[in-house]
Length: 344
Image (tube, rainbow, N blue to C red; front, side, top):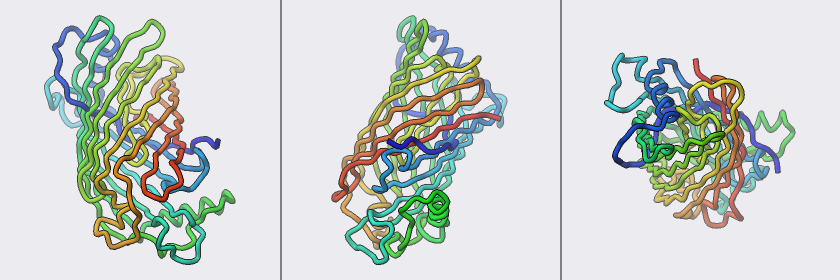
């Protein structure tokens, strides 16, 4: 099985899930990590690069993409915390992705085939993390919220297909975008996004463990959906760690982490189930007058990966399984993703 592709910075502080619990003293490690997050004043950046050639190597629908995020902690703008008991920041998120039909080299339009789609967008989000609360002497709960808006452009005159063709030409791979007459027309897509995550952090003598269930919703022109899922993290550098998520694939983002000494590893695995009420990439665009296929309402995703930290730098790799998204799709696909995190 081919391995994941490259890297890409994206999302940092914040997330998901509503909860209120009684408080006591926060577990030492989680509390120290939160104090670090609440006091930093340096820009955090993270990203992910994903491509089907690093997964199962098959062009089934989602071909490749890049997401980069810059998070500006609140102390860059103000000496005070914006919300009492929370560490917050503003996230600038830039991403692009390419999706292809089954027969990318066709010289004619196949009306029964899925369309070409290319998309580039910029989003701005408020990330906010609640101070950890103790559930036991070694287990704490941290609530992370993320919400904002993304504005993007789908279709021509974006150069993403040209870039894809150039890369294919340099690597000698097949699947160039030979016929774009089956492409969705250009249009603006604006979406509201929100996510809440509950992060249960258990301190261990050698490794910490976190279980992070989440709920995520998207509302607008690009996609209307609700996803529920969770991830498990096992590692030696989870204090002060936040995790983002690529919107297109669910790939875990490296997020922020309290600087440690030497090399530290984190292993993660998880998944989610989504109800998709609309998807402009499969529904013929927001206007619905472009090429389209019959979309599935329920879509599952799963992932497994590893992240390596060295001081303030992190790099990781994950395999992401995407379930069938439309009728007639032969099966799901496996996409490889490379994660990168650093700060300056």
